[in-house]
Structure formats: structure tokens, C-alpha cells
View 1 (cartoon, one colour):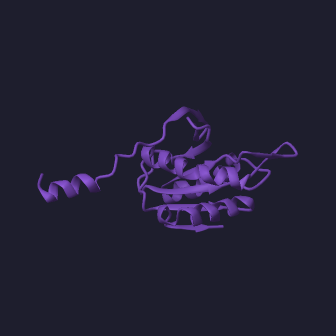
View 2 (cartoon, rainbow, N blue to C red; view 1 turned 60 degrees about the vertical axis):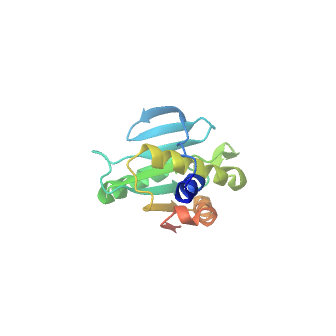
View 3 (cartoon, rainbow, N blue to C red; view 1 turned 135 degrees about the horizontal axis):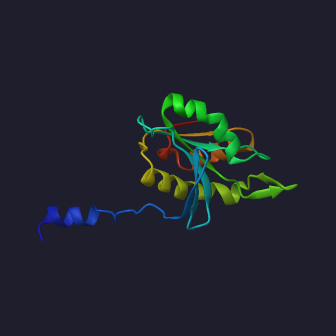
Amino acid sequence: MKPLALLVLLSAGAVAEAPKAKSVTKQGEWDVVTLESGTVAKVLVPAGGAKSNGLVMAFHGNYTEPDDILRFGAPLAAHRDQVWCALQATGSEQGARVWDLEADVPRIPELLDYVLGTYPVEKTRVLSFGFSMGGAAACRAYGNSRARFAGHVT
């Protein structure tokens, strides 16, 4: 075997496949996605589909829902022609949804892989955004995977 061919074979990584969704249902303006791993998120695509292909990974605050941050972001998503994705926190406190950063943040790369593989998103235009404890989740997501984000806002 020629050295160049061998080098190409050795350097070629396995083709990564996007994580699979167990279910995707429509809820108003957004898709409710449940991955095979159990990760749940809501994805907002502007009416007519995103054309500039930006993605905002949005993290809701404690005692709120993904719906809340997506309602807040819908006008901005439409204006800037972006897809927004809101991971659903898994913790519970006093009957309300809260972040369990140790359990929730490690689920972000899989969700990001799914969104990048499924929606019209440019992988170099990904931003993490969050408020309150969702801001902490956004910071951790960014810190754990800096190469995957163009920036973050809290």
C-alpha cells in the first residue's frame, strides 16, 4: 500500500452519526424532541425556515420551562433568522423544574449533535444563552465545549 493511501486511511475518522430522536412532536411554534437517551428539548424554527442558519442553545432559569425562554426568544429568532433550542432541565424543587447541572450539562453535546444534524444550522454560528441558573448551565456548556460555540451570553 502506498504511504499516502495508508496515511489517508489512518487519519480518516469514523463517520459520526447524529443521535436519533425517539419522538418529535409539534407544539405550537416548536418541535418537542425526545432523544433515545431520554434528553428532552424544544426547538424553534422561524416561520418559513431559518435561512441564515444561526443557532441559539437557550437555557431557561430555575422554576421556569423551556417554553418561557422560547417565547422570549421567538421575536429575536424571527428577526435574526435563527433556530433556537431549549434543553429541558431535569431537576425538581417544590414541584417546579430546576437545573441539576451535574446531570444536565453533560447531555448538551448529544443534543447539539442532534440539532446540527437535523436542522438547517451552520455549526460555526452556535451561541449559548441563558438566564438565572440557565445562565450557569450556558456558561458550563460553553466552558466544556468551547470549540463548538461561537460565544455565549448570560
